[in-house]
Image 1 (cartoon, rainbow, N blue to C red):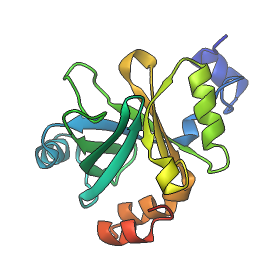
Image 2: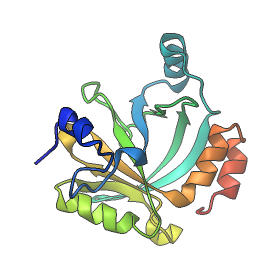
Image 3: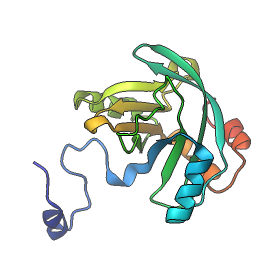
Length: 184
């Protein structure tokens, strides 16, 4: 049974609900898929005062139930919190929006030694795996998308990536971030 906000405050509790798989403190970002990255950055800067990291450009391989997808990906993170991630749409991949689904995903940090366990718990809760990094080739599960919550995805990000992400947010060149990342 979930706790109301009023009950939460009366109890002085900052713990997650009993049995919760994720915690509010582990929320890293909300991801939005956009048609034009630069245009969306400009619009959100003018509208809400956001500042952005430099554009990260990666060649990604996503494992899906239908096989591997290879794509060139472009994305940025807001410097300010609550953090937004803008991902440029890639037709034919998991990174698309039909314009009706609002947020594309919410990204949560997961400790390296627990990411697979948390991912399995999300599956048990009815959030099927939609895509992940090519963990067989990469040697580790570094990110995984689960689909549920009325279409919104839950992304788990391995905390091994946190130092690289923090450096990028602080202004480090994306090429250096990719080179220094713990997982290639």
